[in-house]
Amino acid sequence: MKTVAIVGSGLIGRAWAMIFARGGFAVRLFDPAEGVAQNAVGLCAQGLIDLSQAGLCDDPAGAAGRISAASTLAEAVAGVVMVQENGPEQPDIKRTIYADLDRLTPPDAILASSSSAIRISVFAGDLPGRARCLIGHPVNPPHLIPLVELSGAPFTAPDTITRARAIYEQIGQVPIIVLKEIEGFILNRLQGALLAEAFRLVDEGYVTPQDLDKTVKDGLGLRWAFMGPFETIELNAPGGIPDYCARYTGFYKRLAEAPPSPAVYDTPAVAEQWDAAPDLAEKMRWRDKKLAALRAHKQKD
Image 1 (tube, rainbow, N blue to C red):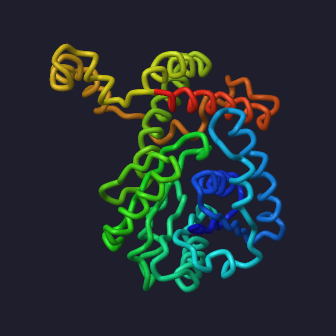
Image 2: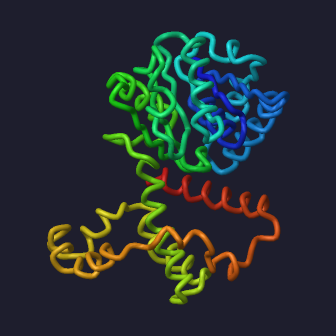
């Protein structure tokens, strides 16, 4: 049985542990904070039961039995084929972690970071083993949303991308390749564009935040649950994408000439108008239940 190490055992690390264990890998959890990795083992076991109840894990007990906690980083990474790092989103901390990983791991082990925006070249570019380093950015929560963005640097070996993609596919995730390094990768840049326009529309008084959310979840989001934006517009014009662009992009061109200002994030009216959830943890559980049902439904297609 092949082994992976999960470095950082918070929410994202625990999700990765469940994903890899469900996919048949032995998983060693490590966290520099005392007791966190040990506590995560039980939380993962309960999470796997939850996945089983949603139809997303066939053998929760077996998967849980493949997860263990390591007391040191060296113990966690001994003999692994891959490391999934989930440290703080701070370049200096990641540089320290990756220096240790490069020194302690087998020379052919893949070193993947869950970083949501920082390019791999920022914190792994000076390492002797930098050719095996890449970004493997998941979407929160990873055990329910399968996309993983694979982003290497010019120094990342093509074989590293190929092997990482095969592993992520083996454990049921959906990897995509970022062809050139770019801050924020693909998903967060798309999300950022939508968020900036959403903040602008609310701040300038065109719509309430509640109705804007309905526009996405009961409009765009229904299509986006099974089609991407290019497939969507292909089906919105008789002649496909070229026809759509010829017919409808006059407005989009005008919109692109005057994008939202960065100031939309400074004092958003959304914060004043939004009815905050009284219990965020409970709302997160509601979200996860909905996502699990949607994921299970999509797997039947």
